[in-house]
Image 1 (cartoon, one colour):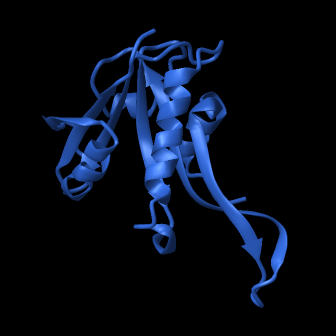
Image 2 (tube, helix red, strand yellow):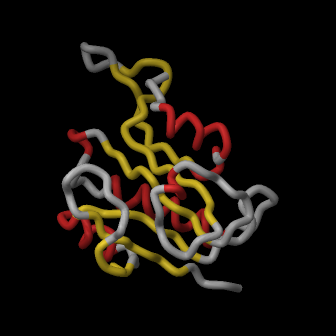
Length: 152
């Protein structure tokens, strides 16, 4: 198992249903198939009653809230630019759109922060850029992205 940083550990403990992993079959150094799978990427989030992304929303999970704040969309470098990230995100979105369950309810929107160079990636998935975020993490500018989910 790989190391889960403290914020991810909290999220995994309190919002497991909002984690999605991308796996491949494991191979030995000689190229032969091994038992098990290797994690190559993940998406994780928490729920929030807010309609916009805040730094505080990264620390709390409030079940049955209308917003899912996506905190991490990670993919190991060798697997990028192969469509895996898009498939991973479409699966995450699909699971949020199609399922009403006792843990997360029926969310209304997905929110995330994006660097400028990743905005088009999220826009192709249906997210709309709402402008620069007030959240400050490091030196780069973050943009708030939002995807409204259809209500049935």
